[in-house]
Image 1 (cartoon, protein in one colour):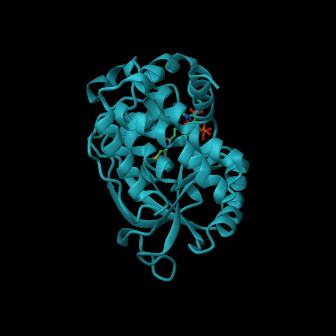
Image 2 (cartoon, rainbow, N blue to C red):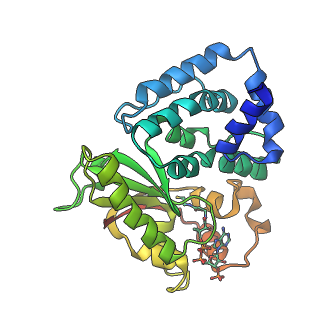
Image 3 (cartoon, rainbow, N blue to C red):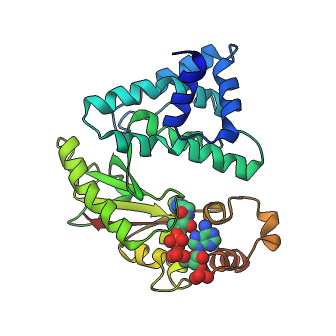
Amino acid sequence: MNEANDHDALFDLLAIDEADRADCVRVLQRSDDAEQVALVTAALLRSFGSFNQIRVDEPTQEPLVWLKAFFELTPHVVEWSRRHDIPERVTRDTLADVGRHLAISRRVTGEFGLQTWRWLTYHFTVRIFALGRLQFALERAAPTSEVDGVIKAGDWVLAVHIPESGPLLPDLVDESLASAKVFFAEHFPQHPVSVVTCDSWMLDPFLLDRVAPESNVGSFVRRFTPIGHSSDGHTDALYFVFRTRDLSRLDELPRDTSLQRAVLERFELGETWQVAWGYLRL
Ligand SMILES: CC(C)(COP(=O)(O)OP(=O)(O)OC[C@H]1O[C@@H](n2cnc3c(N)ncnc32)[C@H](O)[C@@H]1OP(=O)(O)O)[C@@H](O)C(=O)NCCC(=O)NCCS
């Protein structure tokens, strides 16, 4: 296969938009970043398969160095996934986050880049899996998520994440949760999980009071029992709803939907959005 075909196969697997492909080829063809890329690749490999028990070092914070390391590690992720009998569909859906996040970066900044490279370290240390509408990261519970009789620090749990991929329909959520129960028991029986945790701006109770009870968001949030721990989310809600963290733009942002109005109202009240924690039993 020639180089262009190799690139196409890689970019297809990572679901990279046409608009980003020429820039990705330029990233691959750079030769002055080899040392940095090698350091990042080594950092990812140290954590690879440890489900974040070994944290990923950050030898650099240069997004495109991380992107190139992700490209280099893609065959390794595919091979590891095959060895663990992960269905190809799951691997593809999981890796599609690369294209999704390049597209989000372009939408936010107007140019090629990867603002969210740190998020993608999950994928390239094989600690996250896309199962239908939701993504699940296998990890040990932090002391802040302890719940009497349910979660002890150090227990294996599934942290759920919600990619920007359309409506959060309750049926799709049901299916994802049901898949997660089967998938993790089958592939990682050595790390038994019975609880899904969520830490998100969406779990801030401020939101639940301001979206329709029957909305997809409302129904999703109500599945979780509050853990009673939260931290300042600052611009998280703003970023996920409006894809900006620029507080000077609040006046010009649209107020067409209940979600948009809720996010803006909180800033106007001078309050801080919370990233709140919750859990549900699988
Ligand atoms: C949050 C999200 C899952 C909502 O999905 P959804 O199924 O479309 O939401 P709902 O149907 O329950 O919508 C409830 C209200 O929010 C509005 N809304 C939903 N997503 C919106 C968005 N991205 N921007 C603005 N408004 C939005 C709907 O129009 C509706 O408004 P209305 O009450 O005025 O009619 C979806 O927007 C998304 O994928 N967001 C990005 C991912 C994310 O935030 N992840 C969490 C990271 S911690």
